[in-house]
Length: 197
Ligand SMILES: [Fe+2]
Ligand SMILES: [Fe+2]
Image (cartoon, rainbow, N blue to C red; front, side):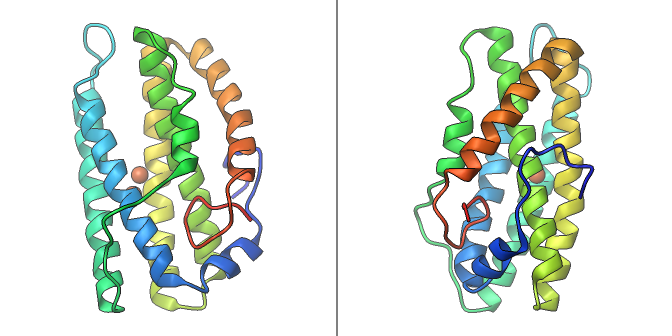
């Protein structure tokens, strides 16, 4: 856990609270996986500058992983009697996306870093859920996702460093880490992956 560079860490009480409504948590989670898949597909055709080797492969790999996660979470959800609803809001991701600057490299860099940040926080939340879930199926599921989202976080950060240069990417990443700690703290509580506590 300590390897994650987040500036605020989620307490176990958050997991105890959101796990009281696992169906709502799974519904929210399913939408996040769908959005992550969509995001990777959108990013696929936004390569910075001329061409960045590995770009298309990375984005298609991430999209494939996220679609697989969506299938898994939906399977668990429906087996437990839940269903996806039509509408989903994620004010946490919206607040992060509001940090994306206009202009070619700023735009690309910020989108990559926002993607990395959402993966990083999701990864942290899955580890807290895995450690605090009494439900063996959910604990195993969250644990598996922890590893996968950790890989995504690293790959997005690496691409950001390649796209904008390490110094610029790292400086912007620090700004975003500080903003993220404020944004997550401002979220209302509730059975969602990115809720406050
Ligand atoms: Fe995922
Ligand atoms: Fe991911």
